[in-house]
Image (tube, rainbow, N blue to C red):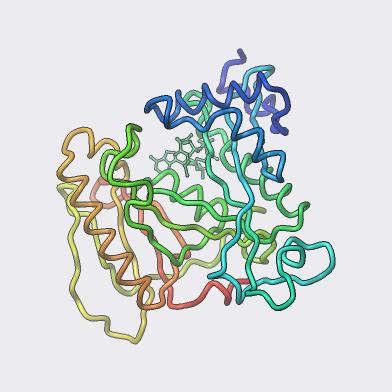
Length: 309
Ligand SMILES: CC(C)(COP(=O)(O)OP(=O)(O)OC[C@H]1O[C@@H](n2cnc3c(N)ncnc32)[C@H](O)[C@@H]1OP(=O)(O)O)[C@@H](O)C(=O)NCCC(=O)NCCS
């Protein structure tokens, strides 16, 4: 195996092909998420879902798979108002039958993982770009996935490096707990929408940082003791941009003080639910340091996903 720090340019992102490579995905899932055998998406499902249009891409250092991303086809009807490209050959045209409720075909990305020793080499972003390219080629304009909004690394990757937005918060999406060490404080998720062909996503994935919005009001902030502080202040302007802060490393907090990490879950859940129910959209995520404490904050603006298409 190549030394990871010097391997970045030697790593190839390509379709996962052989049965042995799909077995490597099973092994990588167990390595990255822990948990039991029941938590691993098995080869049979991966093969079947790929056969009906799913996307399986891997990052390879020589013959060794060091990361992968898996997406399958689905549809949503909550997005039916947007982006229904009816041109011949598009996935939307194929999904929508005359006289039936209109539905939005989506490519749903279920898993993205990179081996620990290969992280922070941009492979996560490159795997997502490979998914995007393949989804667009197959006629999809929307990719969805979920992630734990308390995870700072994932928030940065999803919002700052890829340009996703979110208008939906799912409470305990996979139930209250799972055997994975990443799910010790419930399984709340933000439902993400990646508008694959939008001007916004195009420029963000090409490295153009959007002009950031400055929040007027912070709903939850990080205190000096790493605790969440809820803000009940009433906004001074109508529907101002909002912020929700999260700690820089929730996994460290959960390891040293599970109750504190649960307080973080409760505070951020309540803030996201409140803002999203009032028509806010999560549009940005930024990292910063305050009084020596690392943290991140989401920016929420009063707009609809349709405004960004
Ligand atoms: C999420 C994951 C796939 C990212 O893979 P990766 O190859 O490291 O991703 P990238 O290198 O493209 O991006 C990682 C970014 O996180 C940043 N980062 C690293 N540590 C961080 C921290 N503590 N806080 C905030 N950002 C951090 C890196 O700086 C990098 O951003 P940059 O390129 O702007 O510097 C990988 O961490 C992983 O496998 N995690 C476990 C499984 C998982 O969470 N999967 C995703 C479910 S949605």
